[in-house]
Length: 361
Ligand code: NAD
Image (cartoon, rainbow, N blue to C red; front, side, top):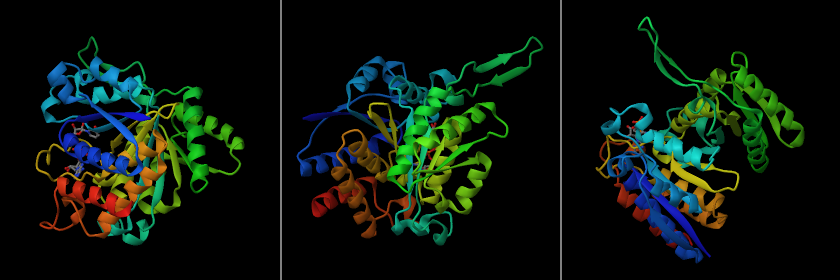
C-alpha cells in the first residue's frame, strides 16, 4: 500500500530542512519496503507570492487527500507589512482549522549528547523527557469576536476572545490522559483557573474525566507557576496538558531546555490520526539560504509522522536512533555546536542521518 505524503516546505529555512527530511523518509522507507508518494504544495508567504492566498485551494485539495503532511515553516519580514488577516501565519492557522488538527504534541526530549547546550545546568535537564499536549484549534487564537476598533473619540481598542466549550476540552483531555497512560502515568493540566472563567471550566472538565483513567495521576497547575517550574525543575513533568495560548508559550520555553529550537519536532493530529508534522521553530529568516539550519527537528517530525499517522513505529524508531547515532559521532550544526567555527551544514547533517539509517538498519 502506498502512503501519500504532502510536503509543504514554506518559507525561509523551510525548504532547506524539508528536503533533508524527505531524503531521510525515502531512506527509511527503502529499508522497510514502504511505498511513499510525495506531493508538494505552497503554504504561507510563498503561497501569497505565487497564488495570492496563504492557504490556496490547490494546497487544500492535496492536504485533504494526504495520509500525512510535513511542513517546514512559514513567514518572514517580507510579508510582515501585510494586514494580520493576509499574513503567511494565517495559512498555518487555516490548515490547522480546516483539517481539525486539534491535538498538538510537542515532546521535549533532551538528547544526553546535548546536555551542555541547554540553558539550564546539566543536572537539572539530564534525562528530561516530557510531552506537551496543546489544544490547537480553539481558545484565544480562534475565538470571536476579535479585532481592532476605533471609538467615536478616536481611541483604538484591540480585543480577542478566549473561549472553549466542554466538548473541545474533553476531546483533547482524553488524548492527554491516553498519552500519560503510555508514558509515565502522570498528567499535569495547566490553566489560570484563579482568574479566567474559561479555564475554570477547563479544570472542571479535566477533573471529571480523571475517574476514567485511574492509572493516571492528575494534577493541576496555574500557568505562571508552570512557567516557573519548567525552568526550576522540569523533570517533575511527564505529560503537560494545556490550551492554545499557554501551550504556545510553554512549549517554546521547554524548547530551550533541550538545547536548541532546531531539535524540537511536533505533531498536530485530528480525530482520525491524520496529521501535520512540523518543527517547532519558525522560518529563521536570519539564517535562510546559508546552509546553517539544523534539519534535525524536521527529521524528528518525520519520525513522528511514521509513528502517529502511518502506524510505522519501527521506521520512526530507526530515524530517532539514526539521529542519536549522528549526535554521538559529534556532528553539530551551528545552533548546537557551542563553538563559533566547528559546525556542519544542513546538507551534511542530512547526509549523515541518511547514512546512519543504512548502517543501523
Ligand atoms: P524562529 O524560530 O524562526 O527563529 C528564532 C531563532 O532560532 C533565530 O535566531 C533562528 O536563526 C534560530 N533557529 C530557528 N530554527 C533553527 C534551526 N532549524 N536551526 C538553527 N537555528 C534555528 O522564530 P522567529 O525569528 O520568531 O520567527 C521568524 C519567522 O518565522 C516569523 O515570520 C514568524 O512568524 C515565523 N514563525 C513560523 C512558525 C511556523 O511556521 N510554525 C513558528 C514560529 C515562527
